[in-house]
Length: 459
Ligand code: ARG
Image 1 (cartoon, rainbow, N blue to C red):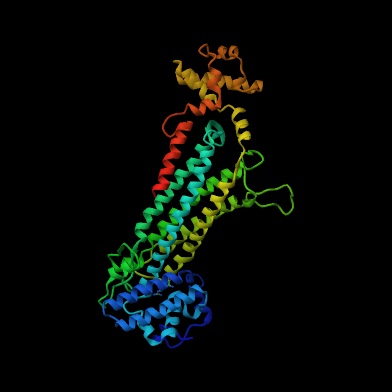
Image 2 (cartoon, rainbow, N blue to C red):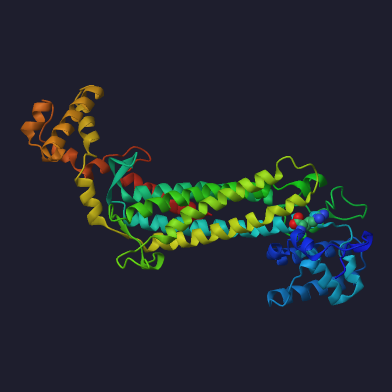
């Protein structure tokens, strides 16, 4: 089949070479953005008098017909036309005749593809921001049900201090909030039009870049045509924001996997997000959480792959840059899927309050309470730490917990200990009294939740 750029060539490439160079297998995902970009471009060509009104209308008619066909799935693309841009241009010429060949006046595939990518990412990032908000809402709702549910808090995965389970969930809300802000911030640099940069140097046609940018809903235009066609920072920023988001999701995934294990039994994941084993009938596996943890790897990979592709590339466009697409599409699909799954997983998870309560009572995570108690009676904290450490050792040797010791036993460790110690040792009190700003005290958690709700509603 003849190539749209075939004039200068005396022989055509073999099919398998075309196959290797083509991007149509994946860049057909840009079909609507490409048509949208062309509509803006040709409108601008008409308004500036570069094309006649009639030519503009003819081409617009053809592009709209292609939009219709594309939405009905009636367009099939061919490797011989290499990419989405050439495939659509070929279709346009078939649709309306030779005048279709005027569409590409004052434009290159280099600014065209960059425009498509900006349009695509702008749309997807907005969608992703909405999905992050839905996930945040699920976290806040679950947290609100568990402000007063006690849970062991860990450091080094060793029981550390009791916390509110809602507080633990809210920690993820704030991670997600930063993720959302990163995407919102990145949108500013996505929202810029490269259209009209031409191949690299601009064009001799009296185009109006601001007009086409306006028609496409972009807030501004690139100031330098070479930068416009070479820049992929906006994709890198998206991929790095996505990598951080996935890192957060994979941490929560890991926690949910642990919590739902026989060893913890803190939560039960809904059947809808679990799978069984083909051999072990008793199994209920947290596959979706594991998969999200695993998919984090491919998103990091996409970031590194594009950083590496771009490293050392001379200006301006190089075919290497065609490699920017698959990783971007893959990341978009992966984070959209992961956010949707996670929202459902958090909404439907059952929190095993009894088991959490039991865990919090049967450990030494109230040891800090006792040390703080002694310190508040004027004993230097280091000494208090030592006294409590010895008491813990005593308990371990006698297979009991601090609250099981009699007042007499406690007093033999320190005279300053009084009857009120039993209240202090209660995990509920320990959590409640952590009223410092951002602490796990119930009032503080409730405050966080109110702030979080306001943040969601304001946006
Ligand atoms: N398929 C190409 C890409 O994705 C489009 C731009 C091609 N430009 C060129 N001069 N070969 O990057």
